[in-house]
Amino acid sequence: MNKFENFARPQKWLLVLALAALVAGCGDDNNDGGNSSSSSSSSSTGGVCVGADCVSLGAAGDLGAAGGYAILAKTGVDTIPSSVVTGNVGLSPAARGFLTGWSETAAPDASDTYSTSAQVVAPSKLYAVDYAPPAPTNLGTAVLSMEAAYDAAAAKTAGVGPFLNLGSGTVAGQTLAPGVYTWGSAVTIPTDLTLNGSATDVWVFQIAGTLDMDAAKSVILSGGALAKNIFWQVSGAVTIGANTHFEGIILGKTSITFGNLTSINGRLLAQTAVNLNATTVTQP
Image (tube, rainbow, N blue to C red):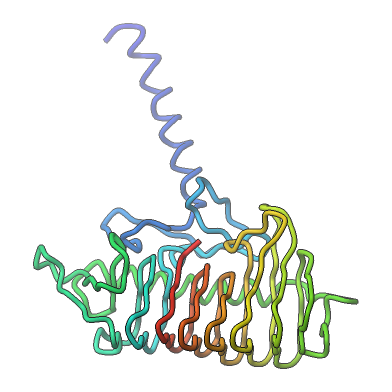
């Protein structure tokens, strides 16, 4: 072995270890939903996010493995055709029979590790806990990450002053700056809602009750605000009216329901069911 090889070998391992440490802080946001034998995930709060495709909860925590899904639920994901989803759809601990309305096609390699649907934009896929490994393990990890993200958002220091119980739960005609907004009640959005801030600003909405948005309204982003930095932590059911457009990542303790011809730029992460009706879901 020459002198150069003696020097290069320890330097190479130092580089490998440094890269491994850097990647470890990033949630899985690949099109396979983390369903590969080499995938890893993090459910930590305040994690490091590396790369433009890594999904972070910013000031609230880290989506970890849940960031590999546009839709993730525990009891069912139902659609009335024709919804269009850009991003993976995951379900656990309920089995594939509770993925309803998707016109599923088995994996072409006969592996039974996933299915596809005309309503899920390729290369994204559908996964359920009773698909072949590694789907059960990866979905279990993703669900734990989803629950951890909900808890992290809920644990943020509550808003004060104008950030506490804004509008007594009726948020109408508002333009909201970044920050943590807290309600000890249900929240209703009867008009368009504007979120104004930069591409690095974070909004966390802590809602102790249900969240309802009226039909034919929109959440509007301005000033460079990004959907991936907007988090709706809702302890009750989420119901979005027909023909309404929504923005952000919904962390629902119970169900999430989108009415006819609705759309969202964000993610639907529900600890019970997700119900769609000709809805367009685009992960940020």
